[in-house]
Amino acid sequence: MTIEEKIAAMLLKAQAAKENAYAPYSKFKVGACINTIKDEFFAGCNVENAAYPLTQCAEAGAIGNMIAMNGANQITEVVIISSGDKPCVPCGACRQRIREFAQENTQVHMFSNDANTKITMTLSELLPESFGPEFLHD
Ligand code: THU
Image 1 (cartoon, rainbow, N blue to C red):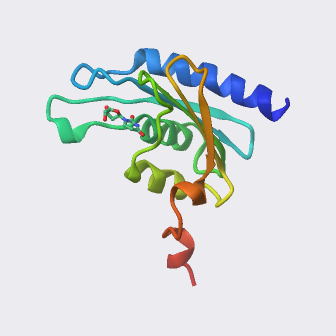
Image 2: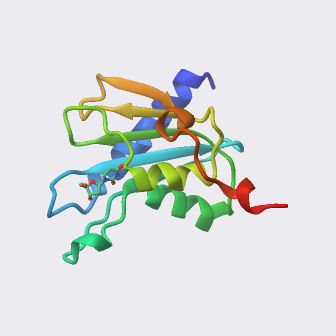
Image 3: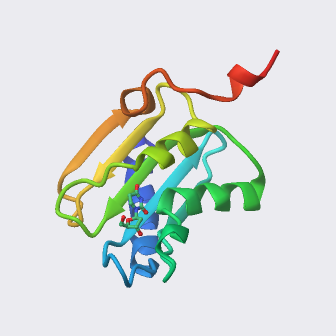
């Protein structure tokens, strides 16, 4: 699979997850798909709550799925799509969530609702000088 084919396949999974998003309050649906070094895709969507701060982002769901299905692994690519006109950038907390399992050069592909506009950035561009697991190891 070429990288373009991979991203296209991830986009389909993120779009399907987005359709299932539970976002009755913001009406802003988000779907995410992560790929791991083992070439396994895990999708997630945002899940809101009447107690607003309990909302879970799509990226958090995708990471949770990865851990639940196959344990922790290196994230190689991330695809994010939302119901917004502009490509959806990950929130600050999700940048840090991705950071836990990614590398500086992990690519984050952010799509507009119609998937016609894509912005690609590396994790270190989105979260420079970041804190991560290696700070806590000997
Ligand atoms: N949201 C995500 O799921 N991921 C992001 O990276 C940005 C924001 C969700 C949370 C909330 O349900 C809605 O978008 C509006 O903030």
